[in-house]
Image 1 (cartoon, chains in turn yellow, cyan):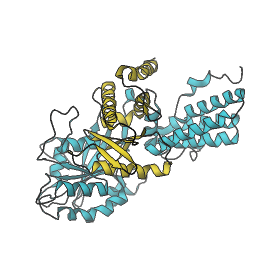
Image 2 (cartoon, chains in turn purple, blue):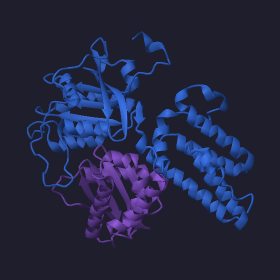
Image 3 (cartoon, helix red, strand yellow):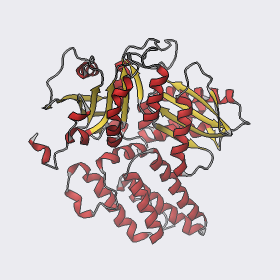
Length: 144
Length: 317
């Protein structure tokens, strides 16, 4: 199961966080900075899977952004590794060359995309067109 | 300079630029950021502190800011301290103790707490400050390391290549919400929730609860928002029970306060709480409650009153 997904910049600022398991609001900041440190400190040629406490972290770096996913032991790291890439590709497709700025100023849309892909900590959709369909419909509506 | 005592005068937000390497002049970095071959006319000079103008213009916003050169912590002044929103420090990576020269800045920067923190050097050196050492320092102080001339260039085949050097510095400075930010309209619409959160952060620093209705015409900039919230509380007061009113007030505060991730999450937790509360109500009452919450939320995020005016279902059905 997926416990959480974070998007963090190189300075360690959280740009997006989504938890699929209840974590007290007060404890999230500490958890996030801890997790981020565990990943940011690693060298480029090190493995993208990190043992962390009683679970695992899967992370990937895209330009200046890191995506970090916390998963339980029973989850398949490789599938999550691919999920992260798929998520980025969907964002890239929607924003045509996604950047940190796009994520900062369209956080609502990024959440919509993420929620099409992951529900309750499980992957529910991987097809890019189907993931984007509801958001594109909403966009059409907003345009009038 | 004489304006400094005038409270109404707010200085432009600035990027504090400094160098801890006597062999590297801050102005060099200023020119590179501006992409100019010569320094522009400073907007202001005070003792050794110099301000240069810069306008950030990207897809989402424009912001007028200053690049402010401060040679050492001892030349800091209150004008700089109050307006610093980003901090860039150059250090000499060729000597072993290059990072110790940065230490005097650390406490000061912690106090100012700028959003963007960048540690710059020419390139990390094995015999001087190594990558690992620099990285570790950055992690401990929440800085980002940028090498102006890195030895290992990022993989060109990468679909999402890392930027380096001044390009990365400019990118990082773009990825910030400056207090002088002016959003571009076309991106402000959409579903509007997040952009209102971001926009309200600086336009309306006081919480809605504190914003009394009498200050309506106080300043034109935030007038629209203020009248919005006034209408909101006026309307809400008359129809909602005190508990719900408190909840709605909190929602309004959350949307008007700091637009950080925690707040955003809290907003949704709050909405969920209110939804849970409604689930224990009888069916009809529940519909009315849901409608009130939705309307209040709409008003709280700065939505247009007209949009929801004709939508009342609770009363007639």
